[in-house]
Image (cartoon, rainbow, N blue to C red; front, side):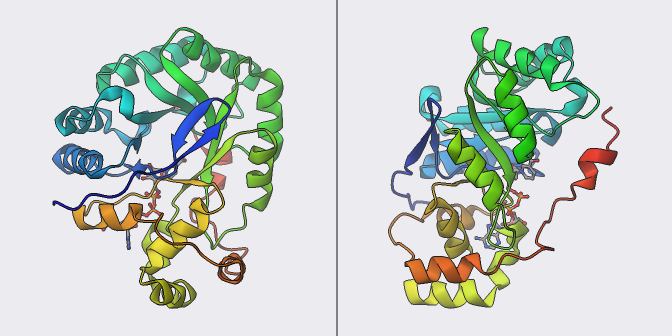
Length: 281
Ligand SMILES: NC(=O)c1ccc[n+]([C@@H]2O[C@H](COP(=O)([O-])OP(=O)(O)OC[C@H]3O[C@@H](n4cnc5c(N)ncnc54)[C@H](OP(=O)(O)O)[C@@H]3O)[C@@H](O)[C@H]2O)c1
């Protein structure tokens, strides 16, 4: 692939400069994963999202090295799984992530899901220590509700850069987005194209036709235009540039309002009962 994309802007979030578009890597593994990461970076992506749970950190690391892009130009996020939230386990898990990625530090280390079985008062200081120990440049949380964000902020001794949550036009996340904003944190949208279903939406397709963009691009633009970071995943090389070409057009206020009206009660894709009922190990 020879096309390149323009520079992707970053958003400032409590000291972290997070590129507004990143590559999601859940379910990408092996050579496919390494190749997509490599090509994304060659195209101009500068932000890669992985997690210990994705079982692909080695492949992500391989892709980063194969790309030839300088390490300090790439923003790498990984996430610690809730079964590793006791302080010593968290420290061990962080070292294991870095060993698999073959990096000396990541840019952002997140708590992947809240774990009701281990007090935040134990986990947050352990997470912050990973920053002061130099294993990550920034720390943050994922799948935290507004109430849990407030709790985390009371405990954390380091600024929290983001809450990574499910976010797309079919789900109203205005409360969590407002809470992040109020505290200088970024909202990082996972499943930002609703696992691909945005491409079938008639409103997004119609607005896309007016801008000569695809429905998926309208969906992603709707988020980045609000300063929300998006991390769409694709296994297809040809979709990498589509998902990042979001900065050469703008949606009108009326188009933004029309897209906001797509939110509905059943819009959530990722099952939250997962969190409450989960066996953490
Ligand atoms: N923190 C968390 O708990 C959490 C949870 C879920 C996800 N995440 C992160 O967020 C990332 C993104 O979320 P996601 O993977 O759930 O879903 P997503 O990015 O919304 O959607 C991915 C799906 O959309 C398809 N797709 C990609 N680009 C497309 C396009 N331009 N047009 C049409 N279809 C397209 C992909 O298929 P092809 O491969 O065929 O292109 C794939 O099936 C994950 O990979 C992961 O890094 C985090």
